[in-house]
Length: 214
Image 1 (cartoon, helix red, strand yellow):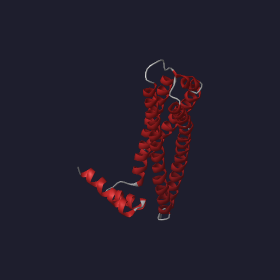
Image 2 (cartoon, one colour):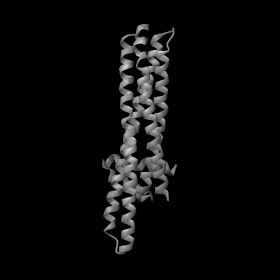
Image 3 (cartoon, one colour):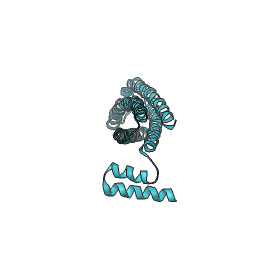
Image 4 (tube, one colour):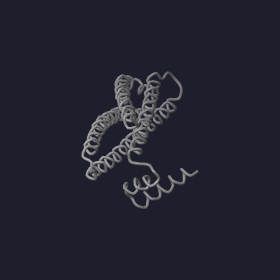
């Protein structure tokens, strides 16, 4: 109950202020630092990629069912494929939104960390903190590269699905199925590359989260 109230208050602060700095400041007042928010957002981004993997696999299965269509209501098959396509679009948008949130808090964290280095009086502690900042930035850069690469693999799949959904919509007849059969291997290959890249990004996420908790 208390946590829900805190979240509600923070949401109100962000809505009224319209800036991320107020959001982070509000969390810091209840003991949640940018570092904690970054870890939480990386976990969320990881989960969104896992969900996207499942969704794109489901869409591939639906497309395979279209190609293997052998009687029945073709419009029902189209509706199923179109639904899978729309769900895939939403999954992709969620992945992008969560990666963007990771990027936003990481930039704020690194800016703050860099500024606070100048507050050190102890030179040894300052050097150690600066080295940790560089190491965290290096690991973050590797993580973001993997996430963005996985994100980029979604577009070819969505484009192919959209084209085939539209074609089927405009040609609801058995001959349309034959025209789509040649597309299956391309979509299978694109989905395979997507899942492979997302697995790499998920592994990078796990490693980054573990390092931030040490």
